Length: 429
Image 1 (cartoon, rainbow, N blue to C red):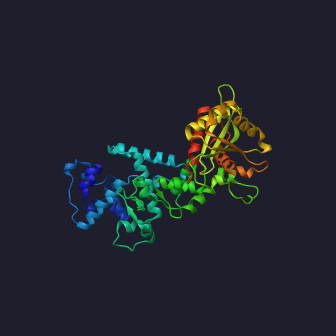
Image 2: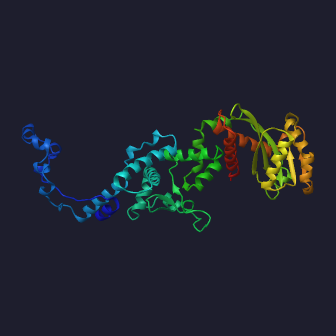
Image 3: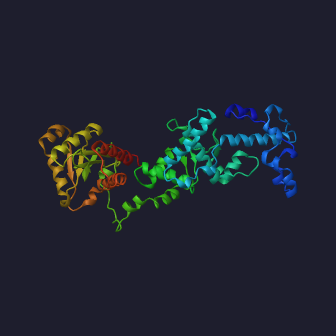
């Protein structure tokens, strides 16, 4: 073990001992009278005389009083200390509110240690492994003891239910049932176990909550699972995080209960290719930062009535020309639908008139008349018929307003955010 530590970590290990008469610590630890302490004060204050001489003249005495088993335990403890240079007390998780900042600070500590040890190791991977191992040691101490010594303890129930094992880094993983899948990677097939009440787990959930643009519980669970993590009783852990998200509490609060739903239209409950039946509606305007002044732009939403996939287009105004150009861009990507649905409510007649005028425009007929595209308007004063796109508009607005807040972004920044919002909305399970 000593040779392995020396070769891996460049640490020389040599066990020797000194006699009790030359050990100044004995006068304090074993107790002494004032008279004897004054007589040996120079030894306690300055150390033995031979310590100030050349190392070649030191009194070398081999540590032969320990058995082979005890020596192996000492070697193992030194090896463990060498692999875990950062003490747990040096990284206080509660002082950090961002997972990326915590990993960055911890990786800088490991980078400094690697520089002193003259090692070329990825400090960020070290930081991730260290934080995970620290969390698992605090949350799954009983399971970890069993995995390190299976014969010494009875198997915990969690180890059996999740089929736990230790990987080559000493991290607890759960052996899933998709090991033969060629699509998923090793980390998804064998996810890392996280303690549901640990502070690091809450930070990981919060990180993927922000990445998924503050979407619902199922979306966050899907993102965490695909990232290679497994949380026992994960739904409750995510719900506990929801209660601390100020933005979600602010935007998700409702003032009255939702009425009972009616039967869904036939276009929404039958199998069809994506965007064969498409709904379209304008979302609210948004201000874009320009060079001299801010200007208003609009979001045009296209939604598949069957699978709820969304396609977002950014238009400069609510004119017929802008709508037709956006519709052409949509069809170039997703194909031409057979039915196009839009609202017809008088309270929203401005957007409805734009869509209706676009359907009868000469430019629109010239391009799409060979495809027998049918335009269907919902009944007057019946907004629930357009509930599919109205609900999607709420999701898009929720994902859009939470990251931006009251700030303003430029045109290309808004395009980037819209692409992130569209990806998050289409990644829902």
